[in-house]
Length: 234
Length: 240
Image (cartoon, rainbow over all chains, first blue to last red; front, side):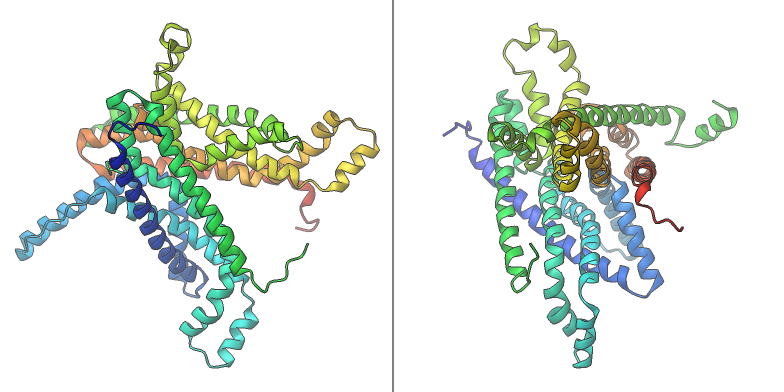
């Protein structure tokens, strides 16, 4: 076993932070993606406009720039808000905008845009006759969504979703730049202190590699499950 | 610089002439870094993709391992390993390599090139594998050798299939290049970070740079759309 010079537990904690960050961002991005896709497919012009602007803006800006904007800008915005609240209503309130929150917000927002595109395609792939049949049976809109559309769209959404998740997982490494003590940050500090870059970065690279490998297997399993009953052409 | 622009800049607190020049310097670094790494990455990727489609495991397995590792780990880690790691190689500081790798630009270029080459290899491999077998059979029937077949039939036809996925990779690379700023390079993001810390103005510094990246992205999207139209012009419907 390699000797981690006492940084082992810190690296392990960092790995847990990375996984938490990735899962929370995933939850946020799935929510935003569903909302975005519904907005894009709605009849309201305003909703379509907002959703299109959102996905276009996100695709034009690097994730790191957005993260820096959210982290540094977020604190200034919160400070301004608390100043205003104090002056106007005498409410004393302070909120520390930490890198974890900035990270989850940025990654969630960025991948929300990609998820919206994935879900839009998947929604469109559901046969409209299925939805009409549900309506004819008197299903409410919500019931149609979660009983008819969701199970059928999942099959079409999974490949895109899996890809997005793999990219998201690797994007979490960026949060170390704004100061979150995830495993990349710990490895960087350890590598600098001990002057042993390979010694600390290669194990971290392996953790990422195994996380992507495990995800790949999991996605394969999910795809198999979602495709039960679908006859595939050879 | 024309007078009126200079006057306009002088009246602005943050976007003075020196700030604009800093952004300009960053833009030049970003474009150089992204352009060079994409060109080098593509040059590496074409032979690697051909090797990756080989049936001999001794040829395709090493390439598979390379793309798997570089696609499965964050670019930031690759950059750190190369940037901090190169300096640690025994004796490198006595060779001419040290003159090259002492500056942050070249380790960043190396990391980006290796990363984009891995993704591009897989894109080209996918396109090669999808070549219709009829095209290859026809080429064989004409008595084309393997090399001629590759050059005249398989690669041009694969290029058409790969261009869409490759345009995504180019944009991904432009956005990923923002992390060069963490190894002391003053690229666009690095310039924005300097200006942020000088004026403590996060919104101005970062939104401005975000707009610059967005402009670059849309120029690339437009250029690739033109390229795609050009490459796929034989598939355009006759009417319209």
